[in-house]
Figure 1: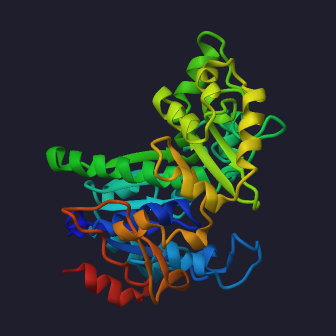
Figure 2 (figure 1 turned 180 degrees about the horizontal axis):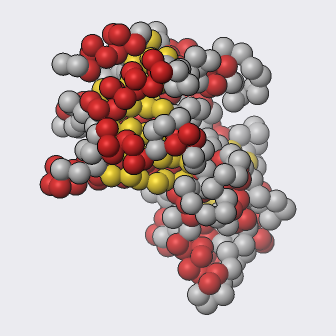
Amino acid sequence: MLTDFLCGHRILDLSQFLPGPAATQMLADMGADVLKVEPPAGDPMRHFNPMSGRTEPSPFYEIVNAGKSVVVLDLKTAEGKAALETLIGMADGLLESYRPGVLDRLGFGHERLMTLNPRLVHCALSGFGQTGPYRLTAGHDLNYVAMTGALSVSGTQEAPVMTWPPIADHASAMQAVMAMLGALVARHRTGKGAFIDVSLAETILGWQGWGLGAALGDGTVPVRGENVLNGGAAYYQVYGTADGRFVTLGAIEEKFWANFCVAVGRHDWIARQRDALPQAELIAEVAALFKARTRTEWDELLSSVDCCYHAVMAYAEVPSHPQVAARGLVRQEDGAGGGTQVLFPAIVDGEPPAARPPVREVDVEAALEAWAH
């Protein structure tokens, strides 16, 4: 079972909003006992709705913290510090998302953490990292993606387009989890913990090997709307339909493009896959074709054709998609997020993950007692 992977490991979560809590939720999904430590005012995510932008009780806090226990500690008091010290001594891992220097000012800098628990895997997840001239600069997902060059080549020819969901938040959560898992494995061999410095900006930077390699190598600078994978090819494109919906065509390989052309009765397009990029003329012709029928009609014609076609699904359609339903990773039942959970995306020994229990608030004494055994 998935929950066997980290069974017996204890993780302290001192993070807020999305990236850190998403990381520790993945650790909880794999069986870790995650205790989230919040200040008296609580995680600001409790009252931030990223859909509406309003300050109100937010179901999104429940979604990203399901599967954890939450304890309130005031780390500006002697009692709160003492409780955290005890928990640190019993923890296997600690993930925090403070600005660099904040944990030091609270009396829990990395050297102190290693004194309290030399086996602790400490991951500091921040915007730009623990060092460098931007270490204290404020930022959010959009800023981090912009810094890496990724945003410059994403979108239309007219302008860059924001990603959804926030890509740096989710990607850095995965990066933190991978690094912590690696450190936990190494600890079994060395007996020592580790300090892991993960930044949201550098997580996205780590994905820019193709773009930077091209731009700084032979000077082939990626340009929005002009390359194969970002809008310049007719065979890898998003198209509108007659009813205002959208479909995707990802026929990069010649056989898939040929299958598409045959299915729509345009054999003359097959050789045009080799047209120079950007394929503006061919894109316009294919777009006109797709505009002639509804999305349902295109589904009926192309879903069974081996050509890398798929409709653009609305969220409401996703749970009933036959592949999604068959895999069992979207659960709709009472609980966080209005009864919908998207589970850890891994099937272990043929079984999808179990639904997460709701986030559970516990008092300090109960938290200490639970970890004392």
